Image (cartoon, rainbow, N blue to C red):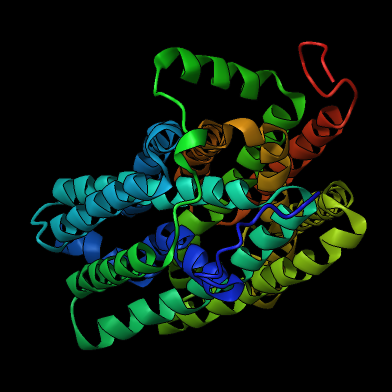
Length: 409
């Protein structure tokens, strides 16, 4: 496929990768930076059940899922930049609400607003990338963005822990506010509009409905969206209870941020390798190998965990999670690109539908997995194995001909 980037050199390729990675990472940053503070937040704001602290994470994902339904279609009509401005404004308001929260309910409302706001740069940025790239070049760009993006889970928990050493948890939300405001200013001054007026379309419910039908009826788009939702459910399940696993089960204390960041390096390394390998081997082959590996590893380790009484030796968990994250790094960028590939003519609404479906699935199933936490790793590990197997079957179905569920090609 050809590279359709405009001749403008402002911003340059590297700067754009870093800028867009930072924008997409606002969601991950909003989660990972506060993982070390979940216990303090739930205690200070008098949450009930120990598992209630998980809602600080899931409430953000709920806002993210809802927000994605609207931003993409609106950006097809108004352009990409105005919608991103609006989303950042909501995100900053949500940060301030969390800073001044005096109850757990107010905190969850603030997190919900942060999710709705962060949905804008998260989803519209994908459409912005699709405006400029397609095919394997798009997969390469997305993988490079993911490589920079992975610095967030590597560094964010340590940043959160560092803030807790010198201040209370509210300072974490102040830091989020400042970073969001700075990113907004950088984007506003440096990123050009990628959707010219002649390519914009009027906003209408009819167009959104027909575009949604096209996403659902296109086998590749629907299939890979479903697979992405399953895989992301597994990731969200782990992410939501990671603090409880490391600090409550294995008693690692302040080292949680170090272990969490070190494991994220595997995801970053695989994303970097994917950016180079995808041009040579293609997205489908790399994704299938990674998904098969993930399923086999998860199944074997689930059995081992059960035989170990639900709490396997810590070093074996680290080895397993490193391998798991390496597979995740290959799958995340490729599945998004595969789902978007046949939908370039409706990139905005397509990215909205795909992102929203993926997030709704992952939020619901990931929260269910997390709520099953019983002090052992059994629920998580058997969930990983089951979701891996279902994802593998779905991918095989997706790659069967015809490519369209309505009989088209």
